[in-house]
Length: 529
Ligand code: GLN
Image (cartoon, rainbow, N blue to C red; front, side, top):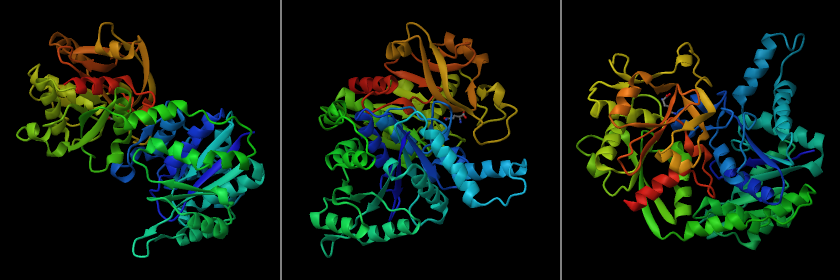
């Protein structure tokens, strides 16, 4: 039977619960266990796919096409296991399921209630995700005390009763604030937060104490005594220069050891050699490289989390410290573009929706093409590169994507055939992993070294095949297509040092110790600039 680890958060949000859960996953995997991770989110959207990135940060897409919380990206990057549609559950999804069943008569004669009907659906979801794993890590979104998370807490309490306390561990992550005027850390918020949990019938076994500076033995002992956890089960988690150091710090502070002891898991010591080598690379870079991300959600860096991480991963391998210039595409004009991109070694035009900031992205592609600045276009980034090529190389002045202009005579990007009749917005795009065939003799082939790849998608629009021949005869190379050759997946301009744009999202598959070839290629070309 699988063992269950539940991670809750207290005091404030944004403490890095996801990083802590992901780090623990890495440590347990390094001990030879088969680990999976999932996140339960208390909001009422069925998934984050319909939310603005400003509300929720990036939407992370899994292989099987689920649109999920960005913490799943941390899980995949740290644990290096592909997650799936069982890896993210929202309150909205649960209520949707229960109410649909109620309407179809699935509960005839019964009063449908939060307990047991809602909690039973959550329970089934958790048990299902635990199949074929040694350990399932379940992170509960939100903060203890939130009204919305109560059904989740009630469910995990019931699970602990059902599976037994040897098979279940509760980890609570809290903030231990430092009060400057008195020069000390304070344990009181942690005590209050643990009390809230205890009122729900949950006694944490382990407390992970988040602080910016080292915690004294006194404060750790106080937390242990007042929160009723063993002394070595108070684990210090201090702010680090790189998040990838977190697994090493948490291991040093004994987290995986006390988790395995509590769960009575006999394992080998974790092999962290490869991870340590990767972290060494982070701190031993010999070059600097500056990459611009030109997008419309740049004020919230989390909106491009996986893209930014992928750039850094590539830097680790190539010995380069990647700094990112966040450029708001709405502010880019023909006049200011050279000033805005001065000192930039390479550019990413990332994905997005809607017409705000589009012209700035098109100008960016033009600038990169005319000045031979390495560029990687992703999803919408590929579509604007195609529009730019059509306007300025083919001379089709009004070329556009049908997403942004209904009246253009040259819709070089148009809505995909199967999308034409879809009216629902949630979960209806072309989502998840699709195969792509690579043309010989191209940059794409050189980067991947393979004839066929699989990458994750999230879009409704595509390259319009009516323009294929005209684009090719003017120097654009279509280097990746769907196996049936109907969909253009990758374009490149071979006369430039690195100009490549992809309809998919490579950022979801980059790992800190296994950078993605498209990002490594961009960083390499940018270093050489
Ligand atoms: N808005 C574009 C489409 O739907 C691109 C989507 C994206 O960048 N993820 O096709």
